[in-house]
Image 1 (spheres, helix red, strand yellow):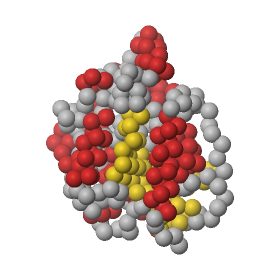
Image 2 (tube, helix red, strand yellow):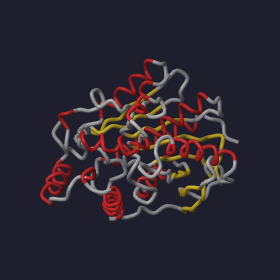
Image 3 (cartoon, helix red, strand yellow):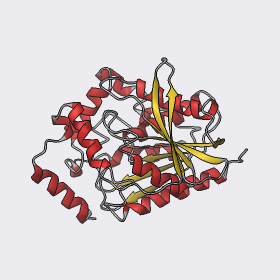
Length: 311
């Protein structure tokens, strides 16, 4: 299927602007551009939000934002990790996405502002993601049902969500209800995790390497299963939803991960948005067809939560 015409115009306008791609800019400039792009979106209404502070295992703290789609008591909770290649993005850049997901799923959403490279190298982001889940379930005193908790994330955030799900299993912690992985990064091996047909469509191969180089302490860390989740053990993981974009150069990473989960006996469903590009999730204002993926993700979370007994 051809590239969505709105996406094609975006790509054409970007090339015509002459603005260098993120990996050709200082990280600070790339971050500012990322925030400006997503900050221009209109914010959907939601019942309420709450700023929170999450302590980390190394004695520091990170920001979080809780989204409540209603005033009902005992809502389930989805802990969300934003995308941006472990370098860019924030709870602010993904404010629209998390608002929409809270409404679609009927769950509270805790968006986590984990620390990013190159200021904080791997595995800091993974540890922050794990700490946020543990805090939410045991110490946060959030107005939610902590017996019904899912993890979710997009791109690098999907990588973190998958890593957290693996940690929950390995540490024999209380089971999660679900994992929602939106065009997730699952491997650092671009020889199998990159579709050259879509090189330059929102993401470039060199850009992905730039993200890795600024996130990992060294190339030898690329095989660590906390980042290369595709090569981890998958048996016993919680059920998953994988959302993909057809015209995404890292689509193979999500496809490979979904198949690895199936091979390990993990229930998984895949939703692929035809003609859409990496980063589309939550951009309903830009791509009307993006609402289908959000509705699917919300329905999958609702179903997962309904299968877990509440308090």
